Image (cartoon, rainbow, N blue to C red; front, side, top):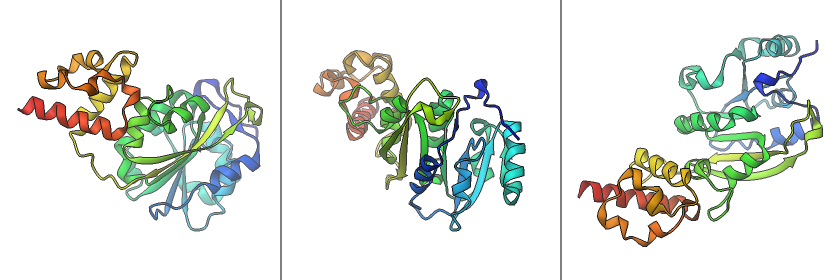
Length: 260
């Protein structure tokens, strides 16, 4: 059976099995999870290697009906563990109420939305291994002071240790994407909760990067910083110059000024 890649689903099927094996090998078992959830398996190029890992119990989540028929035919042992649905709309805690690793060639058109959802379930996901558009992968793994550093960099690095692992050229996909791809690994760090108001932290990060060329003094105006913070030298910087710890400190001072 031939599965036709569908443009509206952002499908680009990886053909190179050696790359698929390298991606699967990056699953380290960090956090001691038993379950692995593969997102968007398509024609099962990663699945072929994942089913060989006897220490893990594999579940697949796929939105494409044609791919589901293909996967059930090729992996009959997984039949009951192939979930048809949209990852962005599923309740993950009712799907798997235990910790699980997330792996996949993420659809490039929704990769940021996938990570925002992961942030909501961060205590349930100790490890993520994924392939993304290279630009997005680099952004997520980027350190402060780099032009790639952005909202997702800060929000994910607050809770995960992130490594950019390797790049993947377009010619190993069917059809080839118009962009380079990159593989990253995220492993949950020891931060159970940030030492600040996490809602305000997100607001500050988003406001800072939404006007990233402006100094924070101007970018944060919509959040109405307290007068004593307006003169602080930290606001002379741009958002991309602040580390996660800097953003936590800024959030603490913003909150103290409001409550004072």
